[in-house]
Amino acid sequence: MTETYVAISIIWAFLFIYAIAGSIDFGAGFWAMYYSNKETQASILANRYLSPSWEVTNVFLVLFVIAIVGFFPGAAYYMGTLMILPVSFVLMLLIIRSAFMVFSFAVQRYTKPLVVISGLTGLLIPALMVAILPISIGGFIGGTGEQQYILFDQVLSSPTLYTHVGFGLATELFLAALLLSDYARESGSEQTYAVYRRNAIILGPITLFFAVTALWTLIPEAPWMVDTMIDIWYLFALSLVAASIGYSALWWPSKKANPGRPRIGVVFIILQFGLASFAYGLSHMPYILYPDLTIFDAFTDPTMFKWLLYGYAGGFAVLVPAFVVFWRLFMKDKNYLQIKQDDENNY
Image (tube, rainbow, N blue to C red; front, side, top):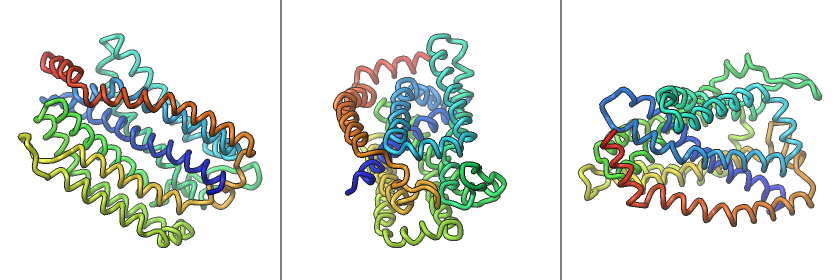
């Protein structure tokens, strides 16, 4: 594997981790808002998940941006200039959401506005992020030389945009419901588990529908991608197998009051998204922005690449143990979960 493909693989790994963690984080914000006025503990549990997780999620966003600037400085400049409008909207919404996250835990009167802000931004931010993908496949850039701009009239009239956005929104709500069902069962709240299990069952086929239609709309819009997708069809087939196992796990027998093995479902659904996103990214190679910018055009010099690898290796030597400790405290520590469960009962 060449240095260029090693670099783009690292960026893909950061993007994938942030996509999964961010989807669950934003989706949990929406579910907290949706159930805030209903007689169920689903909103409390979603807010409990958001409390420690949103800061960890943003770590991978920072790593992703730094990796792009370091490994592909040409792409950072080009994409940053061309897509300044959607990226600026995303940053503003992230700042607003993060500000309410911080103040809501310090000042009680910000709690209810947080639920609304977190829920609305939980839909808007992923929609704007996913909308960047169709623009990168080509045909939506106008101008010549340095005077290039996005043809928003063509973007907004393209079915590819809406199928990608629909897939992004369905995915975040599905993943959030699936993980929150596992979190509810780990916390001992079977009633809340049943609520999120039902949501995951409903959203699973909807997510698959948007995934298929998004790929279908690429046929006339990006035939250069479709040709590669046909060559690597086995990756999509494996992702479909993993999705079937993960979705069926919601009906597997359990010793609890309700059926389902949500932990197995989470693992296989994440595996499914990993395979599908890798296949999608591989079919996009070598272009970052078709047909003007490739990974070879934007790559940094070999010396910078080497030192960046050393820096990331050292950083992960510190971060990985911290993430393991965080996960064990967040999802496995019985004392932590029991304290939170007692707080929930006294809410």
